Length: 314
Length: 314
Image (cartoon, rainbow over all chains, first blue to last red):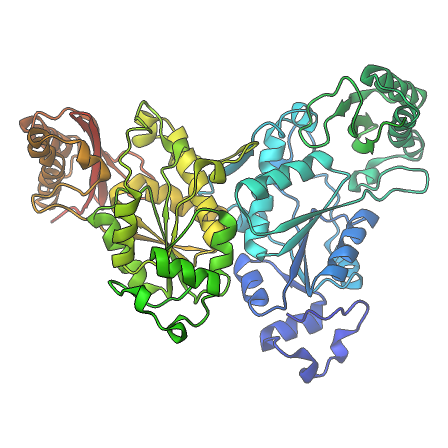
């Protein structure tokens, strides 16, 4: 693996001497596929054995959007070698979301990864990740249970924790990047990595938004035009509550009611709208420290989530 | 850390040039404590950063006996650096076994580790391993449930799996050594390591026995002289069943009855005596392939386990 940033470079032009450290087979693959796409755990380990450190990992389920690209840009800036995983993890699909319907377009994702300077794209099958006899689950207690855990089932986060631990172990990354958009997921992963002493630094990057405030999400693809217009209600509700808190509101229920009025204005009925401690996810009644405001709602067939950390003003 | 085998060597005699790669502070520690004893995860990582590879880990709960020493000898023969952990893991004590009563003698264990050529002894506190807020559990399904899991509770193996994953991640060992005496534990750990893609090779070493056949165990220390004489019944029961199977017995129940008669002759009533598949632990009725015969019984206040793999004869 070259750690070189080859964003946009046509690797078919590579002279052999440019490819120092890339074994012949890998070079062939690089030159035909750009970036190197590998399907097996053994191939990842082989490709990364002599790759320059630090190695950065951006785990994705594909359907890349600006949020993922921000993670990749951050990884590219920080790390000598950038690995992206592309795996629609079946074990985290719960509560009726249709795994088969999840958007998939590997060729597009691979092209975006190439342009973002990804060195290695790991796109395994389910059978590679969960071979026959697979029997291990990582349970992160407490953090997996409220909010998304209550609506999707805590199995959702058991699935996330287990697959992320696998990916970190497979890649042996020094750093891995996740989005703040999935705030609870980021907390579960931080807890997991700390508790199991996995030697990877977890970086959580800011949510990337559309101009009107809608958080970027692969699931936005499910929205019709009319639903897209209503969907802005999630972020505007969060902002309205955050503004009230910044302006001096100290009562959590009152701030929540402000957000719910904004949701209603967009004909959105939330699954939850919660003001919780940003580290423990325990509900907060009196607002005297930064608070995580989290919301989930169905808009059409899309189930959307968003969050914001609000800081009490004077 | 030096990877040198310094069994029995008086390290206070070390010339500085012998200590290539040992930082001054570590050297001081080596020279005063032999082997280096560290209490924190950070100190393990620091000490091993430039240690010669491969690193071998022998996880123990202390109270070292010949079984542990065989693991250490194997690690010393295979690896450039040998790490032993000494941690009486509270989360694997279930079903009424007294954690506080478990035999502890760190000075003796450290001396034995020194003589076995251990380079680094990791002896953390419970607070170091399970700091406030710790919330993660690894569950290995299936294998954790029968036999020991049925008697001690599957939580026993959840505790084992979780602490072993932590130790492997802390040490970053290329190889870790476990005893076949704890056959089910070895299977759970192999499954865990395979399922989570932990880049460590698991070596399972033969059970070490007393002359009369009793498997070495830290819990043998609980036996009175009279109980010690009865305790041989476990291994002789396993051998009697294995002999019957080698001689042509094909019926699992008949072979089990043979073993139970031998146990009864020693006034031992087993918690279980089971003939199971050596990989899946599923009970076997007809014996046409190697079978794991596993037994657990209380002898006085000691709860003892033992096992044997028996191969059907002609």
